[in-house]
Length: 63
Image (cartoon, rainbow, N blue to C red; front, side, top):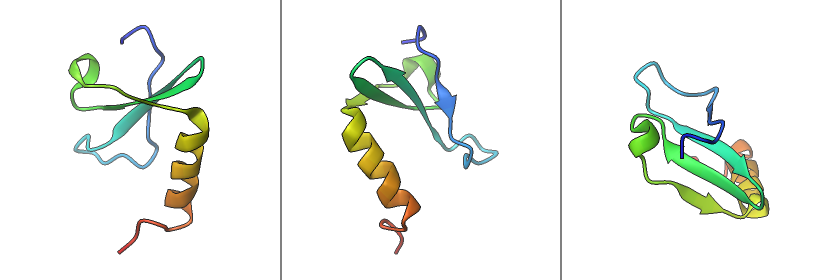
């Protein structure tokens, strides 16, 4: 999946503990940045990914 332009989270740590995302027609792709091209890729609908990101931003996953 190296043919996609992967973006690394701006909140990633120096240790590389983060995810990368890429867009594809009709799908949002997510992978582990530490594994790069060897990482399994999760594909979700863009609307679902948008709701997930909105929930993170609103603090929906804080303990």
